[in-house]
Amino acid sequence: MFWNRGFWRRALVLQLYLLLRTSQTWAGTEASAPPPITAASFLQDLFLRYGEEDTLSLQQLKSLLGHLHVGIERHNVSRTQRQPPHHWNISKCFSSSELFATHNLSESSHLGRREFKEFCPTILQQLESRACLPENLEKEEEEGAKEGKPSSTEVWGFGFLSVTLINLASLLGVFIVPCTEKVFFTRILTYFIALSIGTLFSNALFQLIPEVHLCVPQHLHGHSHYSSESLPSKKDQEEGVTEKLQNGDLDHMIPNKGSDLECKNPAADQKVVSTLSVQDLQASQSMCYWLKGVRYSDIGTLAWMITLSDGLHNFIDGLAIGASFTVSVFQGISTSVAILCEEFPHELGDFVILLNSGMTIQQALFFNFLSACCCYLGLGFGILAGSHFSANWIFALAGGMFLYIALADMFPEMNEVSKEDERSGSALIAFAIQNAGLLTGFAIMVLLTVFSGEIQLG
Image 1 (cartoon, helix red, strand yellow):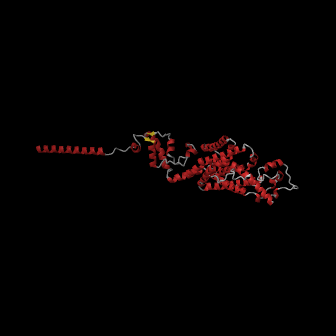
Image 2: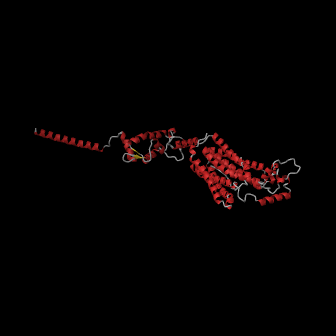
Image 3: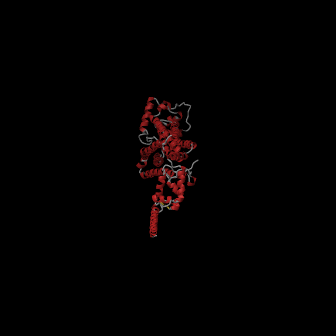
């Protein structure tokens, strides 16, 4: 009995010991096991890795978006300038700045758990659309480039209109010639040359050269029309006329007394004669000179050099205008304005040189306008090149030519024209006129550049 009692006591103690050890083992296992996973665990993990103290700054959120390949910044795509946010195509890849703007977040904003939960559907939509994948990004940029370009009708229509307006400047010389002897003529000419310098330089600096680096053309014009070297002196004119008279080459210019052609306006003819190279011929010998015309062999070589160089110059002008209009209507208008401001003083100089080289007024107008029409040929090539190939090389050529023409060609030309005022003691007036023209041209290009987004044509 005693043995049975001791046995049961030892058995009870053993059971209690085993139960205690089992309880300790279970307690240790429960203490080392991870906490149960809940919906908040995922959010907590993101804040631990990317944020601090249960908040995310915008920079930390950008880091998270970068790991997900969402919110890619692209500096050559400007969706916000084309249309307001509520018109955006939601299937496109948005930059992080655009995503933040849709949630009214500023640079100083911090996202808590609630704000981040509101932002999560945006991330999920961008991931699901796969819009930010490299192949889709390239396709979107190509579509955006096509959407931003004007239609073929706009390109050809505005291009021909601009070239036509510019070419009309070549016909203005006949109306300006009677004013060349006026005192104010040199000052007006100085202003227009300064205006062309301002527009050419600003157009190259603000539009053409930036256009090359972000992915317009101009001239090849390296002669000065108003320098003393290019215009034949009175002595040269006298010697040339005397030589032709001695050789009998001017017989066809002197009308016979019995000629059926009679001049009905001698006073008007004498004004024309004053602008021609044969200034020393008597009025009676020259009254009908320009009506009868001049043989091409009697026209000076300088006239043909000017005509050919202007034809090439106008071809490159048209090339620039055509390529510019394929980029945008604004770009084409800006380039056309710069060319127009440059064309007027140069075409006027061409007209005077052609007259002094022996051409009649009709011949000078015809060849001046013929060289101007090369601009249409350049326009066609420029539009075709800009529509089917990259126009960057045209803009690079134009930007360099604009800078060269403005600084190396027209600046000395402007100073040459202003010398008369400087010699007469009116240097301050010449300085004011030059700066007025420069600032006007500069202001025109700045205004066109600043307000380009608000220009809507067609």
